[in-house]
Amino acid sequence: MKKTDTKERLFDASLKLISEKGYLGATTREIAQEADVTELTLFRHFGSKERLFTEVLSKYTFLPKLKELLPELERLSYESALRLVASTFLLTLKQRKPMIKIMYSEVNLYPEKIRQVYNKFITEIRLTMATYFASQQRKGVLRKVAPEVAARMFLGMLFSYFRTEEMMKGADLPRQKMEKDVRELVDIFIHGTANPEQ
Image 1 (cartoon, rainbow, N blue to C red):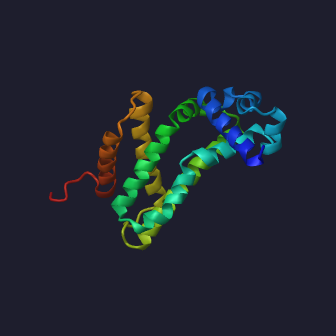
Image 2 (cartoon, rainbow, N blue to C red):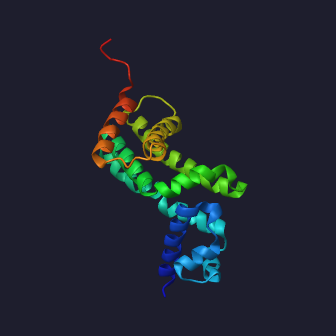
Image 3 (cartoon, rainbow, N blue to C red):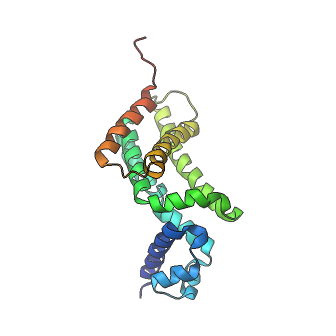
């Protein structure tokens, strides 16, 4: 069996079990069994459960998708770019809803080291988004605001929407409604709520 195939099976098994049981509930033995490998093989590939968790976050969170989007965003209008980010972010959250839901509920129970790993990814997503806002600022598209604060507000607005609609209400938002809401959210983010004619 190829090394890459084994790693992929371990990634898939980790995603499945963490989504079902959380980081705290999913043991390395169970992950190895789900991947049809020995626990020793898991540790040969990743060294520790913490390292495996870090790589699962690297692979399955919004961060790699956002990094892939950056070159395309620079070619789009500001509004189109933000709509693309918003739609992709929400679709990723929907795809990973079971994992996000259980991690969100148990994050305060994580050991300090795991909380640091979790927070590092949240911060890196925000900083990556901030680089886009900074580039728009240099072009004169975005007025003078702190790019990181803009990124925090934009992503926070979207996550709050997802948490309310999908996690708390338990809804499975139709794509059409989500896209309509994205247009509204992006419009409010760009133009605010005040009537420019007043």
